[in-house]
Image (tube, rainbow, N blue to C red; front, side, top):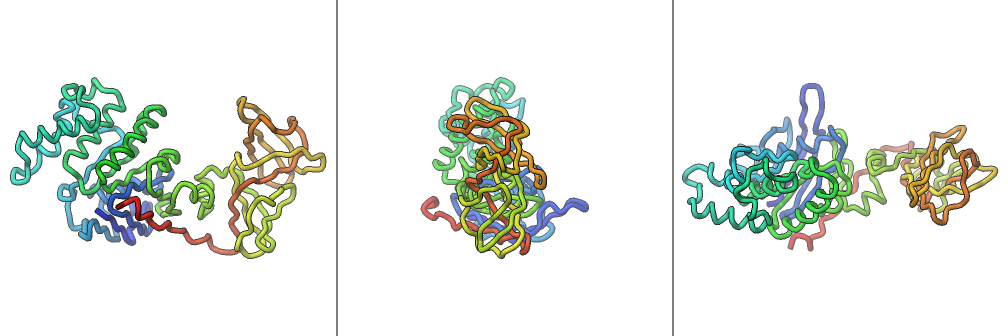
Length: 363
């Protein structure tokens, strides 16, 4: 089922939670809504599910107006962060729940329900757990049961809200790969919410970066990482160093900064801001350099430095220890930028680029 959201706004009291969302999800696509807490991503997911209603906007799924349908009529599979399993029901009964409570006219027979549950137990690799109760399961096992319950009704759309947020890092990595396999096997249209960049980029066909109720950028991992569309995206992607620079003929210039590695920008001459990640900054000893090393530490593999300038904000650098020049606290240095994003202070923020769908993903 394809999903089209147009002009969607939502306010809670005096707070604008969604501010004019326009978004299309292709049939069979796995899309991530990525952003910090309060960016509106869970509210958007709940509106698709029918658990919230927008103040303004449209929601078309498979060409049908879903704002005219109650949640029970949308056939949504919803997986919550904290599983929401029924503690008094076995794994088998939890998975069967959505089928067993259908109206009598639409409810499969007991044999059909049992067969569907058996298929899902095998598919999700949890058949040995069928007669256990949620309290007897690990977090990863509970999340598989929650997904099985969502898939049992053969949902038109699958929605996942921080599905791995309650699990430790090692289990999350394993389940991410597993979920991608489940998605490819079922071919469902899936939207999932996360604040974890690695999770979003590993799992999703496309990622929607949201901030303060707006879509800031839509794209694939490399382009969002390398070409953030707005300062918000740059900061969210780890650009913690923000420095004033001057643009001349498309080149960024700054005192004590070697910016020759940065490409020319189609931006007007004048003041601008440079956003850089610590890992993209290299520190070079220079007795005449305006920067000073305030702190210097090593993790064994990397050097981490905090640098100060008499007239500029502080900068952070993170560079491989092997091959690094001899550096010491208090040393004078210059900074070389291997990469960075430049935004002019003389014009509105650039339009958010929307990545075209890779159609081969949905054949």
